Length: 359
Ligand SMILES: Nc1ncnc2c1ncn2[C@@H]1O[C@H](COP(=O)(O)OP(=O)(O)O)[C@@H](O)[C@H]1O
Ligand SMILES: [Mg+2]
Image (cartoon, rainbow, N blue to C red):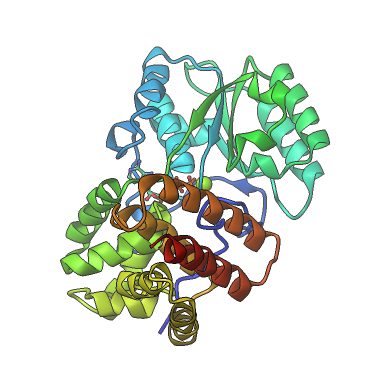
């Protein structure tokens, strides 16, 4: 059965390079929907068209709506993990600002386009120089993955932002704002997108499931929420994938469609480690890898989701904080190419040592 894999960043947000998934840097959204909507990709089909339809991101959406109402805005920087609505917010803003004419006033580029920064630069210049259409007086340029630009390329981007700012507002999107040079950050209103909460993910998934006539068993929903790690793109893709195999969607279907270990398996593994049984925990780990094909990242994501729910009596809150911190470090090591198995064992060893001797 198909597995859900993509080049998303690590579970805790350390970026891994994503492959350019489009032929060129220019993505004009002329015909984003296929002729037959029933074959559409759900992440596109159910992408909110207007800011008013967006779930969550309460710290962001009202401000963007105010920009749209006043028909005035500065350059914007959207920072946050994948699948948190950065592209959606840019599109919805364009839609609310320009109405029918949004396509003529919106251009989406990917900064990590494989044809190189010169292509991106030329395209930006051409677009930014041409006159806006309609009464707003400026248009939008959405530059995705801006944090993949070198400092030098960002420097030239900054100059373009200054030069063309009267007719063009730049909306930059990145995973980490720290990788954006200060002169750009200080010229932008910065918006930090957060991973969706399980309740928010669920709201959107339920909408989609209802619209598609898909039944989802409660446990299967839970499993999907854990597997998606706050990434709504991943959650929606998982729903669509599982729905092609079964209706109603059961927890088993979810399990077969994802490499994310089930909660019970993680619980069992961590339980052993916490009781000081390192070898038992490690045996569970090996079994998990062998049976589900889970990667280090998958396991780390599952452990990360589970830690806050460990009983306080067994692992006190301050220990949890420490552990979460450590998981972040492991995520970084994995991103740097450390051995997955070894890193997973380190987590178990740490749990076994700390809690085992404390008893
Ligand atoms: N606030 C939201 N409310 C409802 N659905 C959303 C929201 N934000 C994103 N989505 C859904 O999640 C998918 C991924 O969002 P996207 O904007 O592409 O994420 P990002 O650009 O941050 O990686 C979209 O296709 C859309 O269907
Ligand atoms: Mg995006």
